[in-house]
Length: 286
Image 1 (tube, rainbow, N blue to C red):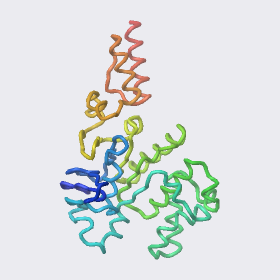
Image 2: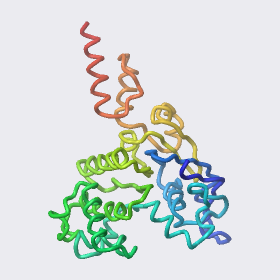
Image 3: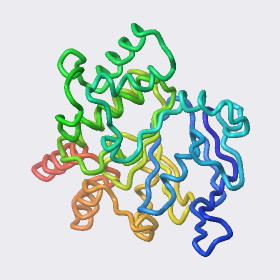
Image 4: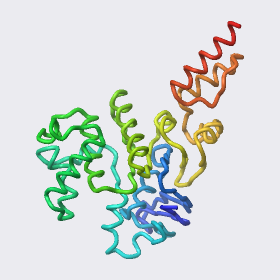
């Protein structure tokens, strides 16, 4: 076990007319090496939850524990926690500010007072991990890049800190389909090749269906469902009650099944749907 939340609640502006209970008695364990997705509608508590995982927010009640030590109990340890747990906010390209891609990615490592050669190595490695070449992009302005490239630069800035856990809050929001597909592929590659624990926050069922091994579904500040994609997506009625829909390919399989077609309904991706439809057509021809 790597991260654990024990009875965590968070109340914004307590004791005022604007008091909001954003999280209510959350219990969750996140294992080392997982690719976990936290999904839910806007306002469900997803972003509030992940901001507790590196101490940006402190629980109103309950504990957040990283490798057996409570986060936030010792304020002097928060810097070390944030090196281990990297958080990329929604629309991170809005936080780019340096004149060059190199300078932006190097900002975090330079604040650690690392030797310049180590900084350069980290920048080159981080850019390579997100699919950008230092020689080609290092001296370019980050603001001259495409939206997807800017987001990858922002991700590289987090990766240059060499975290053990990478949290991505709505990483594909606002990207075109190709940019979205590219970014998700980079996330999967980081998880598999670097052994990173990845926590993906999203409201897109199609995104999480492609990549996550376990889902946590939130609504009204509570965890309502948790399990594998197959386990979660079989509960169509409860998901719809929470304002969430099934992945598009799953909906397609359900509709074909209702029309009497012999297809499985636990299908989440285009490739899976393609194979299922071809198998159905081959069966009908026999």
